[in-house]
Structure formats: structure tokens, C-alpha cells
Image (tube, rainbow, N blue to C red; front, side, top):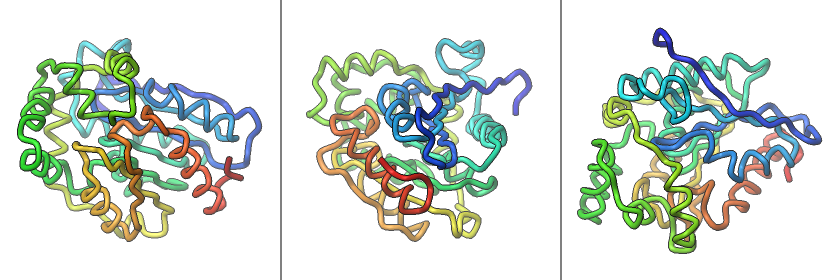
Length: 269
């Protein structure tokens, strides 16, 4: 890791352990560990999992926040690697958006018990989804590009980008207020060509899910990620990109827990 870069995690212990490996949640760009602690972390802890969520370098409220724009995607990867290495046993990785991309990359070089990618940036990078957004919704694409460049966006734009209409505006506004600026170097790294090492994750239990109303990582690109790793992706219709905060988040959590139980990783919900 870069000199002076600390790794911060938020953790909850299982109330009644189900025998599964621990879960490590990895957030996406502009977010933090808080997005998992809103619903998913307490739910999975109640279901018997020890759960942790990483705060990637440069999160608001952390000592290194003032160095946010110095961090690269490699720094984020190093932080994930270090966190995976800190567990006594291989963890289950659950990553969202950029966090899904980071989780895939970590699974290539670290021993993990399972990999769950939610609305992930494809292992091949962000260029293709960004191009589709530009073709399908130029106005929103311009607004998203401005956010990537460090400019502010309206609540309406962020609501349209992150959530479905089923999420009340007041709820979306509360969540949006917790999002933050992101490292432009890290975001640029997501556009760099990368050839995923499929053989490195061969044999790893993998689940890929996406959202039907997601303009940032549309279903076609979620299916593309699934096809790369030989899995059929599942799309939750009526949901937006921020699936862990969406209306109906619990059915996503339940499906993941039941899938993990089917893989012999816990008893399910």
C-alpha cells in the first residue's frame, strides 16, 4: 500500500453464528462502508454471519480524506488485499459497482470463499457501460461525467442515477447527502483496459446480480460480467443501481444468503 495509507473497516459480529466464513462488503465509487451498514450488515449479522465493510482510502471522516485525490485504483486494490489478508480464513466478498470490480480483482490473487458482485463494473472496465449511457441518455451521461470530474450534481440527477422511482425522494435525498467526492485517478483507472484472469477464479462460487432500472451498469453489462465467469446473472426488475439501499433490498439479501447456504456457506436466512 501507499505510504501513510491506513485501512479502515466497520464490523458487526453474528448474533448466532451459522458456521459460514466472514463477509467483507466492498462499496462503490462515491460511497463508503456506511452504505452497507444501513441494511445489509445488520441483516446478515442477524442471519449468523460475521460481517465487515471496508472504507476505501479517502473516505469522509477518515484521517486520509484530505489526500483523496492522491489515491489510485491500485491503492484501492491494495487496501482490499490487505483487508482480505487480515482475516483468519478466506472471506466471502460482496462488492457493489466499483466494489464488484475490486472484489473480482481480489479474487484473482487471494483465496476467497465466495464472490458476489452487485451491479458490478465489468471486469473489463467501465468504458462499455459509459458508452451505452451516452447513447441511451446523453443528458444523464453528461451529468455523470461531470460528477466523475469532481463537479456537483443535482439531487434529481443523482436520484435518477442511483435509485428507482420506488425510493421516495426524501429517502434518496438522505442517502445522497452521505455520498462524497471520489478520487478522479481511481475513476480514471476503471476506464483503463484490463484483461480479466478467468482461470484465477475458476472453482470460486460466484453470484452476479444487477438492477433492471440501472442506467450506470445496465443489465446487458451485468450479463456480460456473468458470461465472463460462466454464471447466469440475475436481474432485479424495478430496482436501481444502489441495490443495498433500494426499496426491496431485503429480497436481494435473502437471495444472497440462500445462495451461500446452497454453496455450503452458512444455513441461510
